Length: 210
Image 1 (cartoon, rainbow, N blue to C red):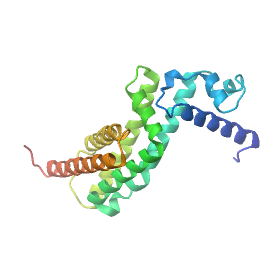
Image 2 (cartoon, rainbow, N blue to C red):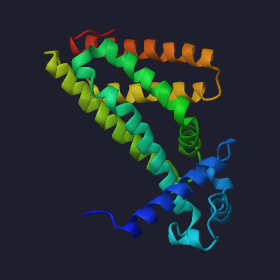
Image 3 (cartoon, rainbow, N blue to C red):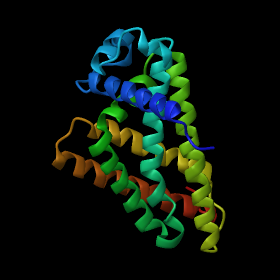
Image 4 (cartoon, rainbow, N blue to C red):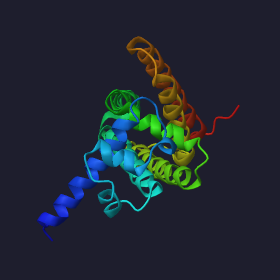
């Protein structure tokens, strides 16, 4: 069904509200420091109008987290799904490169996810945990398909994906306030850690143990 003019206007206004909240948080402010009226002023809406889109700040916060998680998953998806064709070594390199580009373009989004994942707001924390699990599930399935396509033995794909996301998330935290040079060093470290993870998974699949 085609989007009506009213639906399009409502969607555009909602997006404007989310971008206004993002703008207010550019200096490192957390969601808990924002109020709906402040966000309304930032995007040029009447204070009462914003309630037509978000009944309270928690609803806006959840929508903002969903938007940030969608950007993260979208940023990682294209290169990640090429791993079947390009092989594990190149896939690791592309995965890290795409994550660094995501941080360069959407660092404030990632900062928000880090803040709320470690914060005290249960609904925010659980929403981020759910979205990260989706990212783990998608990566694990891609690992299974890539290994199967190359005729390899089954690997612990879920655990490998969990470890890979943990490495990337931890590296991202360190990169957030680093210089371009520091980010490059950290990206190289993440790349090496992921290579070690992949090699270890393949060795375990072939029966090797310590």
